[in-house]
Amino acid sequence: MKVETKLFAYMTPFFIVVGVVYGYMVEWTEPVGYLALFLTGGMSGMIAYYIGFTGKRVGPRPEDRLDAEIHEGSGEQGFFSPWSWWPLLLGASAAIGFLGMAVGWWVLYIGAGLAVVALVGWVFEYSRGNHAH
Image (cartoon, rainbow, N blue to C red; front, side, top):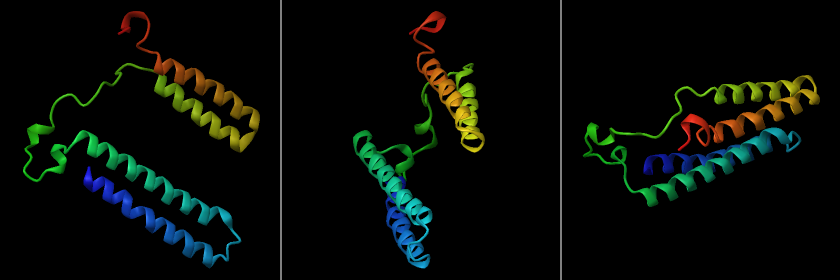
């Protein structure tokens, strides 16, 4: 994960420098632009730290080695629920929430309620019923 760590680590000072330049060019009167760039730099730094920390804990992957073969990356990549409808409901509730920010705050509350229901359903999908582990 060295390449990914370096990528995000190099983006951190870039976004901070661009934020300073942008703030200087608008004479620090428009706070949304330079603040968004500073926050993007901070998020990039957090991602770089997390990927670097995880890479040290997990060890080198086949993608990180120059002498790796294709078959070394094969196998199970994780568990994914193939017939779950909860992600669709969660995405729809996020769309309703964003619509609420544009139309009216009362719609946002409906979207937040649906998002809580969808998230709880998705998390506990395999905790009960025929698919319980």
